[in-house]
Every structure is written in C-alpha cells, then in structure tokens.
Image (cartoon, rainbow, N blue to C red; front, side, top):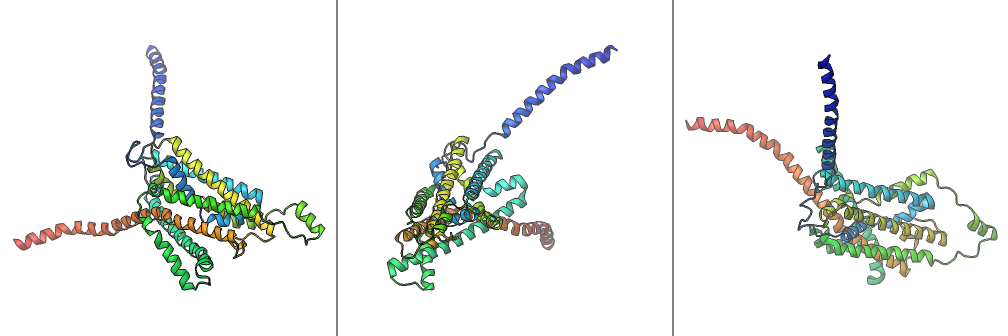
Length: 387
C-alpha cells in the first residue's frame, strides 16, 4: 500500500542520517577520550622540569645496585639470550611506563600510581598499590643502605684507618653516610633533586666506564695451558645455558628497570608536557639505562673470561682487594647508592602519607558514624533533663 511504501522510503532516508549522527557522536566521544588532561594545566607555573631533568632522574633511579648483578645474569643466561632478555625487559618496561603516563593523563590528570590503579580497578587496587609501593621502596632503601655500608667499610679501612673495621664501626659509618643525605629527603619534588640526579648518573657512567676498562685491559690468560686446551678455549662452541640458570637470572632482568612509582611525579612536573616531550623522556631514559646495563654486563663477562673465574652475583667480588680500580669502582657505586636514597625516599614518603590518610579515615569513620547515631539520643536526653 501507499502508506507502507512511504514508511519504507522514509526509513531509507532517515537511517543514513542516524548512522552519520551516531558515527559523528562516536568520533567526538573517542576524540574526547584521547585528550590529555594535565595536572595544574598545560602552562602551570609549578611545571618547571625539563626533559633532560626527567631523563636524569629516571636513569639514576633505574641504574643502581643492578649494575653489580647484571653481568652475573647475562653470564647465567648466555650472551645472546641475555642481551635478548635485557632488550625485551627494557622495551616492555618502557612501554609500560609510557602507557601509565598516557592513561593517567586521559583519566583526568591523575597524580600518583595508586590513583591510576584506583581508576582502573577500584578502591581495593589503590589500597593494595599503596601497601606494595611502600614495602618495595622501604626494602629498597634498606638494601641500598646495607650495600652502601659494605662498600664504604673496605674503603675506610684501606684509606682512612689502615686497619680492619669492627662491626660497630661499620654500622656507625653506614649510619653517618645515611644521615648525610637526610636533608635531601625533605625536598618535595624530583625536579628539585635534579643536581643529585646529574651527579648520580655521572657516577653510574664512571662506574660502567671503569668496569669496561677493566674488562678490556685485562691481561691475557696464562700460557700454561696445553695446546688442546687452548684450542678448546678459542674454537670450542659455548655450551647452551641450562633452563634453571636462565630462570634464576630472570628476576634480575625484570627488576632492574622498575621506576613506575617515580615516573608519574616527573610527568606532573614536566614543563610544556606534550605527548612528544613525554615520549622523549621515557625513550631517552630507558635507552640510556639499557646501554649502561649492556656495557656493564659485557664488561663483567669479558673480565670473568679473561681471569678464568666465574662471574659472581656481585661483580666487585671478582676484583682483588688491593686493586686501585676496584677501589674506584666501590667509591663510584657508593656515591650512586648514597644519592639514590633521596630519590627513592620521595615516592615512599608520598605513599606513606596516602597510607596514613587512609588509616585515619578508616579509623575515624566508625567513630563519626557512631556519634551521628548517638547525637539525637544525647540531644533528646539533654532536652529532657532541662525540661
């Protein structure tokens, strides 16, 4: 009939229009979801950090005590497989940090790591994240302090006292070194610690440089080997790494690039925080850290093969006590660990504030609710007594 035909033609005319409007609204919603929201605004006066400051801070946080263990991890997993795992770890960690910063911007300009987890998974994820970051940062501070004491004690014994130090003296020395950087822990932003980051990265570069020099300038193996043994050393193919060795080395590769809890504060302090500058900061930091770790691992393996000794989990244990370059390595690593303490302390302190604030609310909410229930009864009792 004519009515049915008119309805059919009207539906044909309306449907493309509805589809166009729906696609337009969907495109607008998608565009809005892709927009970045910046903490304090794009041109905020509180944003004073530069890309170079963020790169230095991230490299100084990433490259610390891991420089001692990366030669052992690469030796356990084999040279080729170790470089492949190191590359994969750096790439995936950098992508994770980049996704974290992008998600924090698109979710409304989130400031901290726990806020991102709360927006993604809910309040329970925020509480779990706060606890995990506090425990991780605290244990890292303790481990760095203990390693700092172990490195500084031989230096003090050799160059200051001229005698072995007692255990109480080692504890006192470590405590004094930690107290020396306590004023730096009162800084409120990572950008204010940029000079500390620069000195720490310089020490890391010097540490890797000295380690590479030791590996390259190592004397040739003694010629007491037989010709058959020499042929095996030169032409023999290396045995493939065992699966157990590779699995035991995986935690080192996974943990050496952890810096997610410090990346978000750096992004909130970045001046003119365009997506390009953010990407440059992340890619530059992880590229430099990967290069330093790769050189340190190759140098440690080369030194171990040259001196014909197994690569230990602490590469400094491979050097003799009286070696001057080994003492320089201990000094540079001590500086790196000492300067990393305030950089790790800042996110740990912020998370402790979040934890204390949450505990205060959790403890006070039952009291507040109980008083709100009792207040009408107390008011009625007072009014009744006055009557």
